[in-house]
Length: 127
Image (cartoon, rainbow, N blue to C red; front, side, top):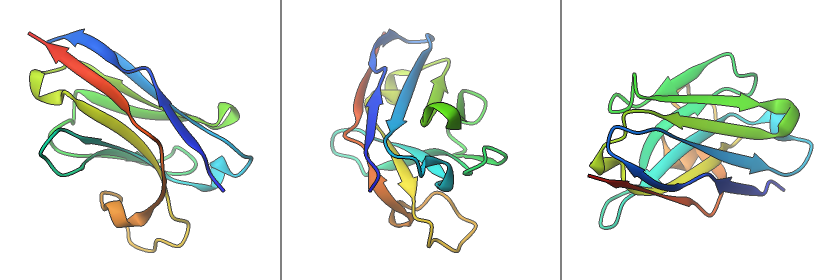
């Protein structure tokens, strides 16, 4: 029902910035809250940020507050994650996901609340 494709990953020096994007297919994109997650080798997938369907509310993991910004352009069916002041430990595969419309909690950080996932885009941070 929903196809998600991430893009914009690459190699960045520590302290630099990068913006990753997630393009969604279909005309139902505006019905979904969206989230960004990442996973480094040997680690669990980690919640980073989420945005409500309208874009009126945003949520961030404490570890990225002040550095990362999530936004969406519903006219283009795209959600973005602007990443500033990147650190070596930010190196990971970054995934976007669409939150289930059946989710009833006010918590947006749980993987189990997301129904559709992209393939991921690699972000590498060098020293």
